Length: 219
Image (cartoon, rainbow, N blue to C red):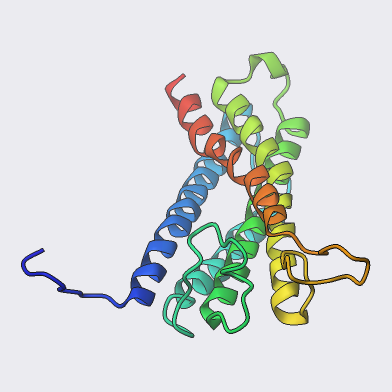
């Protein structure tokens, strides 16, 4: 702001940092929510551990390559400029940066972590409650964790499918989201709006994944 036209970032770098801000913020909150639920929920229902300790470890360790892919996508292949939502055609256009693919894969692996953690929590609450701990005697926080896990388990699958479809379009040339792709039957086979539907089936419910554990703590 000190003089007209001063720029500290190129347009590509600005778009990459802007895009990374959104997805890193969401992934960080998901990790915090998962840690809090994993630590508190078993103690509150009288369980010694989660139902599947190895799956629990998997849900943690798979988050590490997810973070590495997303962060490395910022510096490899000119970053990515799709925004945190990764909308086509920006994410599928021919010649888009390699960093875009790393971002998509990182997003995909982060979904694996969420789904694994959600399954573990649901099974733990269903099968490992202490004697006398009925469902309606559980603390409100555990109910919040159940609601959060149900959302993660069901909604994350749709955004995972969307990222897989983007990857196959980029790598194999399939036309899921390409409105110019013809299937030979006289109408376009691809539709970029399809991605938005799949994405927001996840991304609208995910705001409750962020807020419900906090409300459970306050309650």
